[in-house]
Image (cartoon, rainbow, N blue to C red; front, side, top):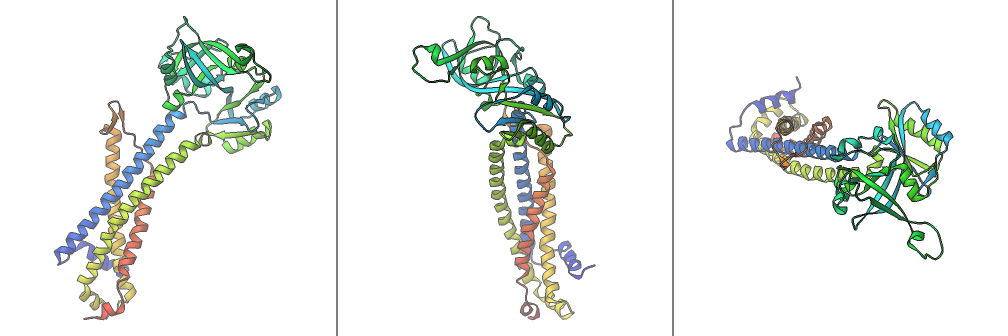
Length: 401
């Protein structure tokens, strides 16, 4: 067994004759345990919030989405459509038309986006699973499905055939306008459902059949603004994106789910990093106790160190004793903290003790990477702290009687 590790083992398993050192050692261990447990719990909480946030946005997010980089719309030819269908990784795709509109119902106006979709859209997304009131639109019928927020602002319900909702957009063109018909395109739809995803999306989209959007915007039959794809889960996304790009040309961009939600990812990652740094600072403060403990142990065992030196131990060997002592204290405290953190997170997952609302528990998630992040962070800081403390040992110290 390594000489330094053997001595460390004896030191860790034995109590000091100085009660103050024993007390400070216990405080140092408790600080590490609580610090590592807190960091793990916070990271698990942010992982849960991340999953909770993305769970709802991904309900209507496709695996891949094609958008144009030139203008608002592009032409999808029959030949291109057939080539897309021939890509084995693509299970299905839906042609989409999106544009900003003004929705009017019962004297109330509200800005929103019309999203005209074809009959494949319902198989690509899980939109029908988030419609608590009414039902999804039927193809080739003048119907719509609005978000909960839009429904509230317009006071529109579901399947009210007594009054239709009007969708309006400005007409493109030049010249003097002499009547409203020359300035605005309008279509009337009956709202048949209300979806509930999250506040932003609930206030954004009005879903209609694609022919309604074409009629409203005066688009040609093969003119669209985007295509959304359902891709086989075992497919290579990058390879599939390249195949789509080759078919549709350089004026389109293909985005995956991460790219579609890049703003949300950036926000969540920034918040996660900020909290990680704050709790890492707490760990650094806790590890100052390790430095103090090691320095006090060095002073307490000064005579013993002199004996070891006289028996042939080098200054490096003696330094390593206290370096390993600090590392082992950090490792043991970190593992205990992770165990406590895991138990508390598992309790929240199982029993939902902490609630955001009476029906919504605070979301947490157990992820292997959080165990690794906490342990690596703790060990790096522990090694630095132990190195600083053990460097106090020099030849003059161990030679002094």
